[in-house]
Length: 142
Image (cartoon, rainbow, N blue to C red; front, side, top):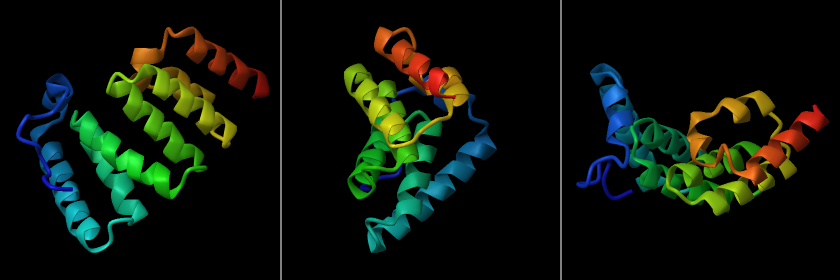
């Protein structure tokens, strides 16, 4: 992790601006802490997950995706990691990859139908017939 805040700013300035200043400060503190941990232990799962979540919350989707990619390499069958990876892919415009990652997440055991149905991070693929079919299949299992 070279930098906590890349010079180009967040990919989603609107999302960034909706985070209260004190919350942005807390998220920045968390990211600084993660950077310290990851310098010492590059594969520290909790630090990678926290960094991915904080980057995404601040609208730094590319940086969140980088963390999620590292997590998937470490835990390729973890349904929650695969789900978060799919969200990052959707947020960065990689729709086909997001659908594929969601299929992997569901096959690995992800089963939170309601969360997936309402998750704003999946907005880019919400109307994709493959996403709708996946939701339908999940609903049948429930």
